[in-house]
Length: 125
Image (cartoon, rainbow, N blue to C red; front, side):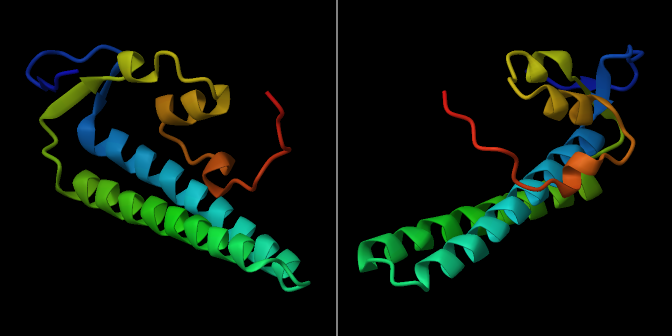
């Protein structure tokens, strides 16, 4: 995965690094929001008398939420400071990504409701 200078005419599959970073930051922020919602739900459930070992597991959920939020912040700053001269081919980055709605959001520039996503239904796989 290499970046290419803007001097090479970008095709439809090229995306400025700053824009890609902004989109990824939005996705991570949405994931962090879902984690925070799950923390509140789990906390409410635990207040009914959960075992101490289960309460300590909630710390891991809190850490995950903080990590996602931190990574989102870093990607936002990359987007703010990235040179407008660099583009990346986005299709190789999206190859094999299983969430079709995520692929759509990363490919297109407009604001997506998925960036304000809520947790979906639980999937058994």
